[in-house]
Structures are given as C-alpha cells and as structure tokens.
Length: 242
Image 1 (cartoon, rainbow, N blue to C red):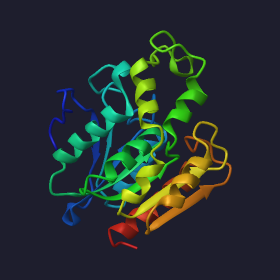
Image 2 (cartoon, rainbow, N blue to C red):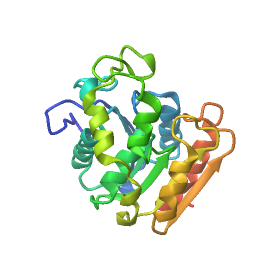
Image 3 (tube, rainbow, N blue to C red):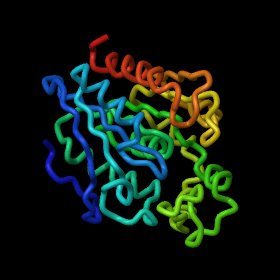
Image 4 (spheres, rainbow, N blue to C red):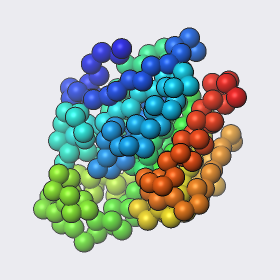
C-alpha cells in the first residue's frame, strides 16, 4: 500500500501492512527490540488483533534486521530512530501511534520528543537506561569479535556499544513527550528490568499510564493475550472507539 520504504542510506525497510478502516486516517506502527524483527510472534499477534478490529497496523524490521537491507553490525538506536522517521515520511497524512518493544521503545522515546507526527506512544518493556543495558548484557563480550547472547547472526559491534553509551539513558527525554503514553512491563523481565519503566514514568507528562503484568517476561511469552488486551484497549481509546 505504501510502496517501497527506504532509510536515509537507501536501505530497503521490510514491512508488513495489516489493513483496517482507513477513514479515520490512524495507523499503528510496531517496532521490535534488539536482535528481533517484525515477525516475532507477539508482534504479529498484536498486529493481527488490531487489524481484526479494523485498526490499520504496520510492523517493520529495522535496517540490518529480518529481511530489511543493511548490516546488523550497523544497527544502533540512533540509526533506528532515522529508520522510523523514514517510515513516518511514507505515512504522510496519517495520525501515527507507535508501539516499540525493548530497544524499539527507546527509539520511540527519542523520536516522540521531537517529531509531532507521532500522536501516541506505547513502550513494551521499553529500554530506558541504554548504557546500563549494554554493560549488563554484553559487558563480558568483546565488540567486533563476540556475539549478542551467543547468537552468531547477531555480532556485537563497537558501533552499538558506542551508541548506547553516548545516549546513556532516555529518561531525560520524558518531559519532552507531549502525547498520550502507555508503558507495559512484566514483573519478571530479566532483560530490561521493570525499574526502567518506573524511572521514566515518574518523569513523564500526563496523560500517561503504566501497567505491570504480573509474571510476564521480556517478550510476554505466557502473557501475550494480556499484553494485547492492554494495548488494544488503549489504542481504541486514542482513536475514539472506547
């Protein structure tokens, strides 16, 4: 529907569009986390649920991930912010609600504070303290030699380490976000701790909402239906369906 989408470096961004009622001109865009892609089961399930209710939804793989062009080694939070900006360019004329998981949550925070085309923000287990995340998860891995979580397809680059360190934390960006914001986080998340969401929620503007899902892990493995219900209801409120 939106044709080929490319980032500022000319790399093709792979996406899947789930149709819905286009009369409201509101679309939900779903962004994934580090080492993920648009085909993560819980991302697909959320997109299908929204589309089934008539809410147009687009899920994308950031450059270097999934079937998008580019090298994984070049994938950084800052580059993904620019990827998302190019996706918004392709959605000209639509009100956009962005849902970002994990590192995709940090991407959303960084863009929402300075791009008025985003009309609403959802952070799913959103990464907030980026440098602390890198040190915690990859502090014992040698950049440009080792891999993220021992996945050979996901080499740890110095570019990623440098970018997360330069950003440090996105908690200070919270006051600049002026759109409705939903944060959803599992209490048993051992990748991005619940405290990340608590820290940024404290500094966020109204309207804001933080929902804890008891027992849920980082990808909502056993709690995908709970996550979908929470996000679905919030989206319906934003588009006037509630």
